[in-house]
Image 1 (cartoon, rainbow, N blue to C red):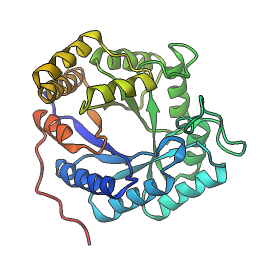
Image 2 (cartoon, rainbow, N blue to C red):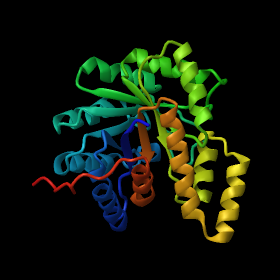
Image 3 (cartoon, one colour):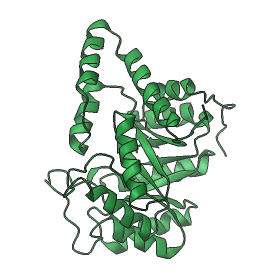
Image 4 (cartoon, rainbow, N blue to C red):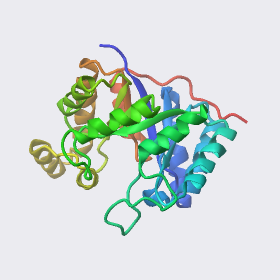
Length: 288
């Protein structure tokens, strides 16, 4: 079985303890030589400054290609593009361009009056600068705001046509879910790489909460399995087995890249990656 390329998602810290956890996560996963790492925006753009600081620190101090999330939420076009220019000035030239979630307390996304209406506009503007490699999001199951089951493929096609070079999917629990989406994208003429997003389950209740928010279906058998594992104290073993099997099925189905949503909890991700045959290099030293 071929060895996949891997990448990791981190989120910026909002407290001292969270800061220690982020850098512990980076140190634990850096030796696995990811093809890139990404750093998220908080809901409603609430971690804009923290994201910039985390991206800049990872880029400056560790030998890791880093992609910064950039959203359309609660900012003018000028403000959003100024953030992108600041990344370029710092040497960060990979962007994950997203519409973004609704601000806290809002029921749905509403564009800023002077902002980008959606991710396609953002991608187009970033692409025109010629300064960035642009990744975008993709939904193998219908986005909560999608009009119908084909809308997510249509939107992804628009984003790729606007200048994005690859897409990272929302997480899912069945490899067949990804394969159906990938096949639909091929039929729509999408040729850019589509990287499956993987969520190692460090908390089953937390995973189900995330799934409800983003429209990911939860298989009944998997829910039953985690309920039984909790009674027997086998949640960690089940989580490792489930995630490793999912990744193995994807790789056997032709997937060449896997993107892990680490939630700044590195150890399950690290064990899954090792189970796939990816062993750590010598521990990377921080660059002075």
